[in-house]
Image 1: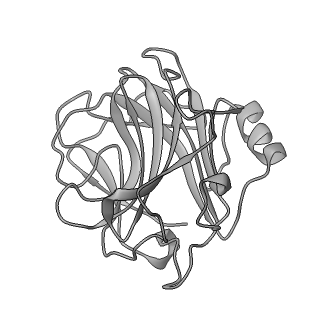
Image 2: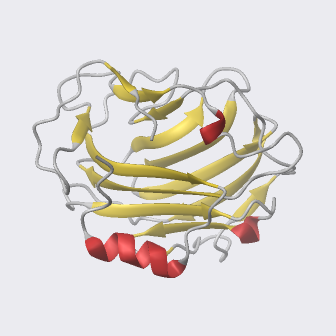
Amino acid sequence: LNNGVYNGSPTFSRSGLLGTSVNFGNTGSDQYAILSDSNDFKFNNGSNDIPFSISGWINPLNTSFDIINKYNTVGDNREWELYSSSGSLFFLMYSGGVHANRLNARGSGVVSSSSGWNHVTVTYDGSGSPLGLNLYYNNVLQVDDYSGDNAWESGTYVGMKQTTQDVLIGNEEGDSSSYNVDFEEFIIYKNRVLTVAEISYLYNSGSGINLE
């Protein structure tokens, strides 16, 4: 269990799925949670990628926002990021910190504002192939409407770079935008690919996992 710190003054008074959720952005800009750089969040051992999964709940009040990432808008401190852009959900993994070389997964038009709580999951088997990357939204595997695949490669992907970038929830380093979104129960699983049955369980439980 990794405890983060908050930048700005997020709101904790909203009713969550399990206790209290946190909202970044409804009272001002540049609000997010920071999880300090750690090997827990690095998915490459210096030679090869490592399997992982990311799972959590969002309550979006708009359709463009950062969810969780290990990414800096400046330089080459890019590892991975999960975000929504105009209602399409994206997960990107960067090779060598370079934006042009990456693995991509997308769920087109799945995120709508004021839709209540929605469950998002990413799984990756560490293979270095887009075939090993999957993105789920509300227990549905997303298939990109452009490529027709679960994920695809841009440029040449040879594995994620290990950077010193912190993990941010609710925004990304170098971005001072205001995103009005509730977050709860985000979990990063290193060396573990959640199964379809496990993802279904997390979604159908409707309340995440109590870590307290």
